[in-house]
Length: 77
Image 1 (cartoon, one colour):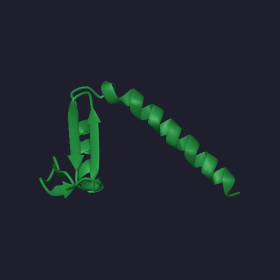
Image 2 (cartoon, one colour):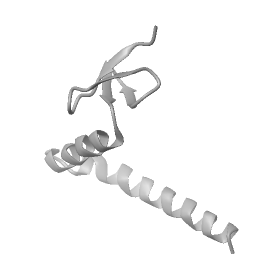
Image 3 (cartoon, one colour):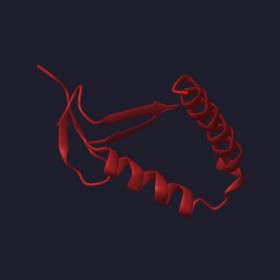
């Protein structure tokens, strides 16, 4: 029988293999949909007392995704 999880944003119950589950350093985040995950992370960043804690990582990820987009666009040319 599959495990059940509860979305931390809306409380909807979903089964293993569905939704988005993130576990890091003892923190378990379960989201039944990408919409709930986006809402959670948007508020997390907006309400964080210090933007410095995520700005370096965000800039690094933006650069990585930009490189991936450029590589993909070069393949199609």
